[in-house]
Amino acid sequence: MLATWFPLIRPFTLTAAAVPVIVGSALAGWDGAFHIDRFLALLLCAICIQAATNMLNEYFDFRRGLDTHESVGIAGSIVKGHLTAEAVLRGAIVTLSLALLFGLYLVVTVSPWLLAVGAVSVLSAYLYSGGPKAIAWTPFGEAEVFVLMGLLLVGLGYYVHTEDITAGVLVAALPVSCLVAAILLGNNIRDMAGDAEKGRQTLVIVAGRSIGIAVLAGLIFGAYGLIVVAVLAGAVPWPALLALLSLPLAPDILRRFRTTTIPAALHPAVKNIARLHLVQGSLYALGVAMAAVL
Image (cartoon, rainbow, N blue to C red):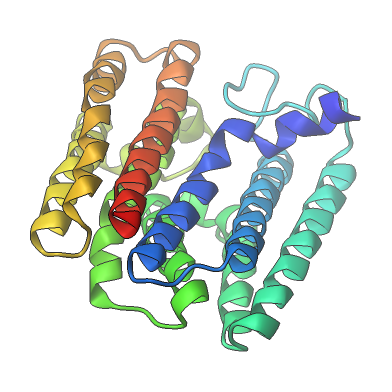
């Protein structure tokens, strides 16, 4: 059972949901507020929504004929016959139900307004891959994750502790937003040839590979520039500059995208963007947390 279902949640992507919550919670701690129960509830809720989104993506891409045995970066549970499409859909619904339970705890302990935020998050998880015009098939996928898994999730990570939100928190969230959008963009660059054949119109397909790679470079290196901006603006304390130690991981990622178009060869580079997001975000949060206890 574990071997069958575990790949469906695409484990290496789950950090994209965890890091924003950790950063937002660190910012709340820096401002003198931290509740371990709320942190864990939001963390588990975010991870469940991300896992369910991955399952829905697997389901809808199979239904639309996008996934094949040759596809890279998918779990392949349906196309390989390990699970039926209906079983994967049921798994996504169960996982979203778990997210709802964790979310309801926050609704009760923090604010009823979080119910509306949760509804938007679940709807977005569905609309990303499903619906009459899936966002994943348009040029707006990166913009969606920039807002929802960057600005919104860091903001929520802060709000559940403080029951407040500030402009400074949104400024502090921008580096996280850049790298989570970079993960999706790297994924779309890797898959652009096969996606174009199936009729997808992702950002990189519409703009072209060269522009797509330039945007990817802007998101990755822009994240570092925005950390410096956040420090200078007072949105984060100076120890947050610890995140700059992850910068040496970035050049090799872009080199790989510039030197090959083979999806299988690019898949490790996509994983490395996710790793960069994790390392940079963890160091960023650690720096903020250090300032909170010093």
